[in-house]
Amino acid sequence: MKQNPGQPADALQTVGLTGQNAAELRRRAEEKLQRQRPTDGGRRTELEAVRLVHELEVHQIELEMQNEQLQHTRAQAETLLAQYTDLYDFAPTGYLTLDRDGAILAVNLTGARLIGIERSQLIHRRLGYLVSGADRPAFNAFLKKTFAGEVREFCEVAFPRVAAEPLVVRIEAEAAEGRRECRVALLDVTDRHRAAAERERLIQELQTALARVKALSGLLPICANCKNIRDDQGYWKQVEAYISSHSEATFTHSLCPNCVPKFFPELDGTAPQPATAGLPHPADVTNSTWTQAQRKKATP
Image (cartoon, rainbow, N blue to C red):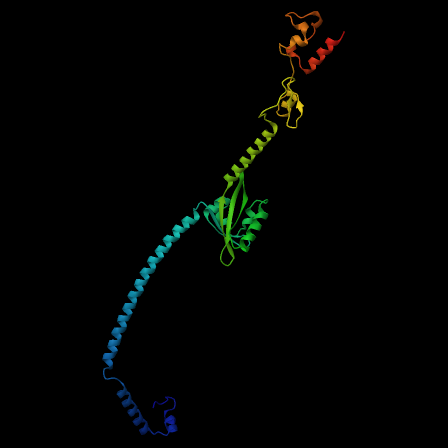
C-alpha cells in the first residue's frame, strides 16, 4: 500500500500497520504484479507498434487517394460551373430570380442587357419600378398570381428606354419550392409588337379606303328606254344618281354631237346663227350653263 507523502506514519498507524508490516505488504504487491504481467510483454509491445505503424501508413495512403479523388471532382465541378455560367449569362433569354416583393435577387447578362441597366445595379431593385407606368398594375397582378398559383404565368409589359422606342418583353414566371422566390424568363417581343402595330395600321387604312370606295359589280337592271337603273330597294334612279351613290365619281353634263341638233337645231350649221350668237358651244355646256342657255333661248 502506497503512503501519502504528507503523513506516511500516521496513515500506517491508522490502518494498524507497523513499518515491518508495510514493507511486507509492498513486497507481496510487487510479486502479484509480476505474476500478472505476460512473459512475452516486450515481444507483444513490439508487434503492436509495428501493426499500429502499418495501420497509420495505410490510412495515410487512403487519405491521399481520397484527396486526389476530391481534387478531380472539384476540377470537374469547376468545369461544369464555368459551362453552366456561360450558358446562363449568354443565353438568348433573360433570366431573373425575384422574391415575393419583386426584388431582383439574381439576373444574367442577357436580362441586364434587355433592361438596359448594369447587372450590379439591378440586384435588390424591384423589377416593377422598371416597368412602364401604364403596365405596372398588370405586372403587379401577374407577380401576385405567380406566387399564388401552381402553374406558370405570363404577361407582356414595356420597359422605357432613353432615345429609343420602349422594349416590349414577354415575362414568364413560376414560383420556386417554398414560394419564397420565383424564376423569371424575359423574351424580347418588340419586333412582333411592331409588326402587329404595322398590320393594324394597314388594316385601318384599308378599311378607310374601302369605306370611301364603293365598287360596282354584278348585273345592273337598266331600262332600255330611259336608261334608269333599279337599285337594291327596287327604286329606279338615273344613271348619274346611282353611280354617285355607289362610288366617289361626280358628274358634269355636256352634249354629244349627235344630240346638238335635237336641242339646238339653229347650231346645226358650221357658222353660228344670229339668234344663237351669244350661246356657248354645246360641248362646253355644264349644268348651270345649260340652264342659263335654256333661259336665254326662251326669252322672246
